[in-house]
Length: 449
Image 1: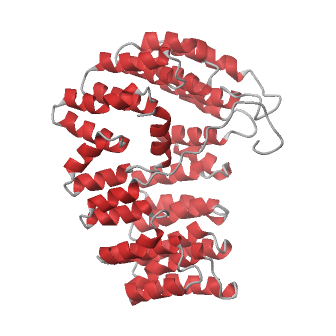
Image 2 (image 1 turned 90 degrees about the vertical axis):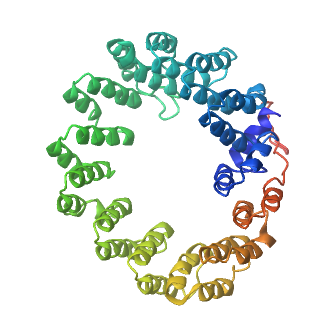
Image 3 (image 1 turned 180 degrees about the vertical axis):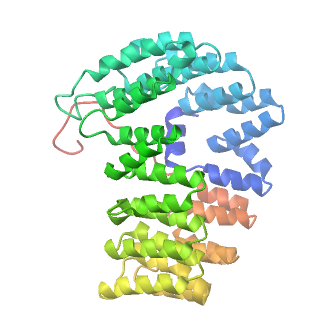
């Protein structure tokens, strides 16, 4: 095994059995296939098999499964093994294999090592290790996380406060590490857990324009402490939508559904301008059996943002959920008419589930195939989805087969459902050459750069 090859296949999900299909194999009773493939370089099979062995009390066998992957030094395998060991109560071993990679210089190992130490009574040691790295973004965050367990909140606050004094001269390129706004957010976290809530709120309100992350943190803090008046005030002025969402969620949790709806619908509120807030309102309405109102909310957004596919998806799903496919189709037809009767596939396929609900799967498939892009691989995927949803899995396979490279996961999943596991593996394990690594050499203006 080779760490670079393992990483490439796991990251791109190419030439391997992806985790969702490993789960499908196990669900269909093909445990022997997963066990066999675990020993043949299939990482997601190895991980699933090791977890199963651990659940059966066969910890030594589980570690033996992971051993060849660990031997490559691949960080993903190290993290997985450490998580298993920690879950089994073998904490010292989890710490040790992480420490080895840290001392070998892996850039992510110190964070994992420090968190492990802090979770198991060694937070003081973790804090000491992290202290010299306060200027590095991810490690600065970890230092703040472990400071409480180490009893070093005040020291962490002093370290972070020093970072709040720096102002970037060339934002955002000046601070590649822990920048001022992020430091303010971290300092607010420390003050909140010290019970200094007002101070934390004041920090997050620092400056005339707050970082979006800090706006979200402020809204969450106000909600956690039940500061409804402050949250209402923030919702009235925060155009990011975070405060409104937190306010509505808090009111809904307290049983004040009408208040939650009103929070979104306030005069000149976010629903009027922000489709994300409109989406949240529609979901709130649908959760409380007010689906028709939810449809109305998203229809307004669909009219205002003609052609935004995610809005049309949401509207169509709501129409399906309310048993009103004809209304969803009417809106899509009006959109198509406004465009001269032409729709690209990325908008056209939204209508297929609606047609299937109103007129049947065969009619939806016929209309899909009549589209100018109906013979493409991406159209095949949608047609196969309709067929499989109707229990016609064999037909779905036949549709996908000519487009196997582009739809390999879908095709393999249907083959597994049909019990044709060897065929599924052949589709999934078709290897493609790994692209060359980026060069660290000198820059060139002429090919091959």
